[in-house]
Length: 344
Image 1 (cartoon, helix red, strand yellow):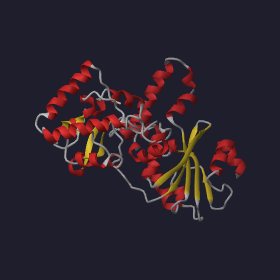
Image 2 (image 1 turned 120 degrees about the horizontal axis):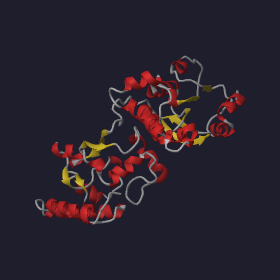
Image 3 (image 1 turned 45 degrees about the vertical axis):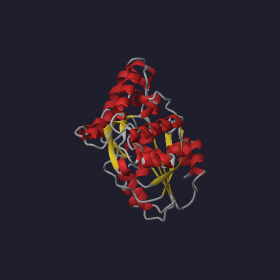
Image 4 (image 1 turned 180 degrees about the vertical axis):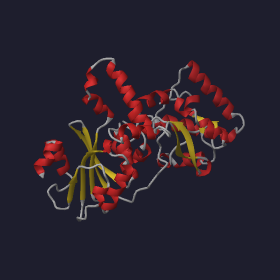
């Protein structure tokens, strides 16, 4: 069995597995399958499941992960692999042909990446591909694993494939509303601590919301106050964020009365825990806004500068509740147009 696995994945990957599991133990189940029934039908007492078949070829990915979860006890290990679309570009023969490769990869991205995520086009995708060779990102697969009750232990890449070692920590969430399409809602804290759904255009890979704690554990916060070295962000997402285009759908929240045009940023409960207590209390008294105070005050986008700008805004808002937002709005517009103020 050892040599068979090495022939399949290589010496490096085999050694990587061995850091976390007993490869030759009777309780380690090594299989290469895209069918969850092959996991369920094994009646052995298992402590580890290693699947050597690419996740890209699994038609119902979450269902497969959920079945693996059912077979394992808490803290037991699951190892899986997939090919990222960046690795696919390197491997594909057309990747070495100028111009043609760009046309091909755009078409492939639309069919294999976008079709499965757009209602009405899923059927066309499955008709053409039968669910095989789906384009996947590292962030999406790791996020799916976390949503299905696993905690990420480690991940690494060998011979064009990314391998993840995860352990079961809870039952799956069975979340049918995970962020997936181009427009989605983020859970954010509103006035009084009420959780609201803030609308945005997608700038991150699907299921990225499940990885915030993991990314913070790996890299902490950047100077901007956002997670550092955040691999969840898409290339086009960086452009949308820089010019605040991703935040245009927040006007829906303004119309619904959950937000206003000017105000402190809508933040997650996780980030709320990390800001000073006095600022927490000030924030809870007001609705969040689309245009943050640091833009109006022309401050840097570092954590300290953003928090200080919010404190100054909220203090002034308490003293001048009717004129503060008007003044901050026009100052922000001036800074964006004439000083070319950009988002972090």
